[in-house]
Amino acid sequence: MNMEHILVTGATGQIGAELVPLLRQRYGNDMIVAAGNRTKPSAELQQGPFITLDVTDAAAVRAALQEYRISKIFHLSSILSAAGETNPQLAYAVNFNGLYNILEAAREEGVKRVIVPSSIAAFGPGTPREQTPNDTIQRPTTIYGVSKVAGELLGNYYFQRFGLDVRGVRFPGILSWKVEPTAGTTDYAVAMFYGAVRDGRYTCYLREDTRLPMMYMPDAIRALIELEQADAKGLQHRADFNVAAMSFTPAELAEVIRKRIPTFAVDYQIDPLRQAIADSWPMSLDDSAARAEWDWEPQWDLERMADDLLANIRRKLGKQRGGREKGDEGNRRYTFSSHRLCRKSPSAIADVVGDEPTEQLCP
Ligand SMILES: NC(=O)c1ccc[n+]([C@@H]2O[C@H](COP(=O)([O-])OP(=O)(O)OC[C@H]3O[C@@H](n4cnc5c(N)ncnc54)[C@H](O)[C@@H]3O)[C@@H](O)[C@H]2O)c1
Image (cartoon, rainbow, N blue to C red; front, side, top):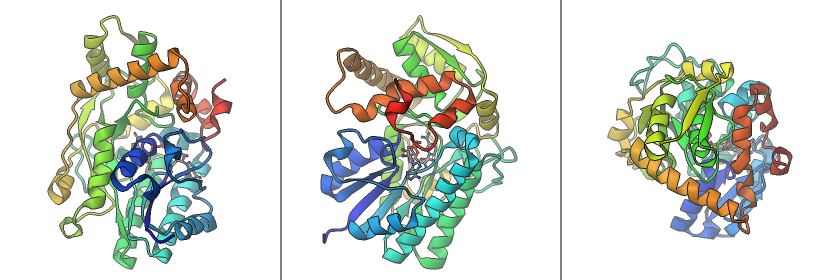
């Protein structure tokens, strides 16, 4: 195999499932190696090379880089915030050791660039919460947040020490319709849209006034691709860019949905675990460093996103009602699992930690 390839780890996840098809459109199906762990891949992900790769297995990571002559990596494998708190040991293994394995193998195998998303979870209660600066106090109180700070520092270290070009953005909560999120703290926002379309109602696990920064998936994917392609000369930061698009509370989001579905009803049943996590995170972000260093600019605001999300969710649920589409297996868990998860106790989140096969989650 002579051509160099791009590897996407965590490819079956919320972001990976949308990044892989876009990269394949851009570079060709065969050039993008999608790596999943235990979730069955969708038919779409199998339109190019798909491998199973546990990132905690250093030898397997190195073998994959060698086999496919990988020149760039989008490392998306991670255990997210709420799931991390139910199994901190697994979060440590995947988020610390998995990232270390990727960076070490990338260094040894001469990979050119590694893109690693960080998160607003890299901030903590001591951080200024409004217009959180790019460079500020980072003392998070979740294992996920601790792993994100460590990941940013490790990425910067690998660049300074070994010249490995590691880059990353701190994502806010990401809304999307294709694959529903299941293990984070900001997932309520997507679940609220699904609840509105499917049931006309939604029970929210965060307080109605919990303001958090959010972003629509097309902006998130574009941020990753644009940062990957940014001219290195312009970059003062590396693995730690704030990126912002919008900020809202559950009550404000419900109001936006109600403008489009007037009978939509929301009630609140607070999950103390996720509320505590949300209360320790920024409410809005200052992303001027990303704007100045690689021309970052969001394109989606709340109103425009709401129209697009509702149209896509209606179409997706309509199709599923009319009979499941051939090759839709990979999306099945996203239809039900996050809503089941959102109604369950935090400990139930542990059921999905480690990416259990779909069939065990959804009867
Ligand atoms: N979605 C968001 O709102 C959001 C916000 C901020 C940051 N991020 C970051 O973006 C990245 C992608 O997040 P996502 O939303 O797609 O998460 P996700 O939970 O949907 O996907 C993560 C993927 O990691 C994979 N994984 C878990 N253990 C693994 C292992 N041992 N080996 C290999 N893969 C393993 C799983 O297969 C899963 O598909 C993560 O770094 C996450 O921290 C996401």
